[in-house]
Length: 237
Ligand SMILES: CSCCC(=O)C(=O)COP(=O)(O)O
Ligand SMILES: [Mg+2]
Image 1 (tube, rainbow, N blue to C red):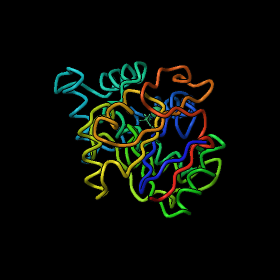
Image 2 (image 1 turned 180 degrees about the horizontal axis):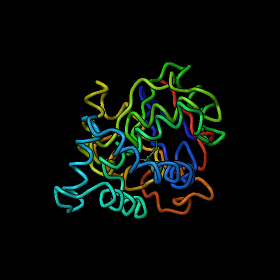
Image 3 (image 1 turned 90 degrees about the vertical axis):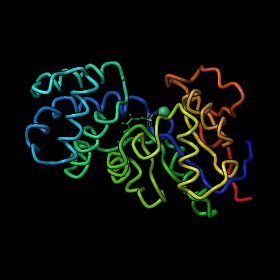
């Protein structure tokens, strides 16, 4: 057991709290056939029209491109697991509806809620930083295998309100929003490049090398690497 002291714990989702398959199989398969119908059903929603405009621009499509061409770009990004903001925005809206209607449940690793609750009960504050949109994150935590855990998190960050996960300025923006010194924050993620960016800004880092997950055998370099949250304790200073 490794003991850390901090005021904030910021957690990634995919591969850290949930199996990667929960996102790449369950959530992506749910979103895939619903993207086109969602775009067509919300022609006056400014969030959707802005996302569609960004997809046309980023996807190199003409202004006249219709839903089928837009969906083709989105499916290509999903196949390549490119976490591009307008895609994550549309996915988040679809997942929000899916959780509300009872179609989706988030599978959490069994060590996750005991660890989050113990940190929360000790007075630490918890936040999420994921490529999934904030709307999608909140929906995903509203219906999990451990029930509704939304109250555990003080705040949420995504690539829109913080920036890309592999770039240090994103972590600087989050620390500033939290009103915390970088050294008072622990970031937990399964992706070494994300941990590198957080560490470059002065954050403490914990790498999740979960057995069976894509980064189980990754080189975590200078980062503390654990197989589950049960191997690390975090206390207030
Ligand atoms: C409903 S949250 C889904 C998370 C997601 O869409 C995603 O791409 C996961 O990315 P992360 O940064 O958490 O690895
Ligand atoms: Mg991850």
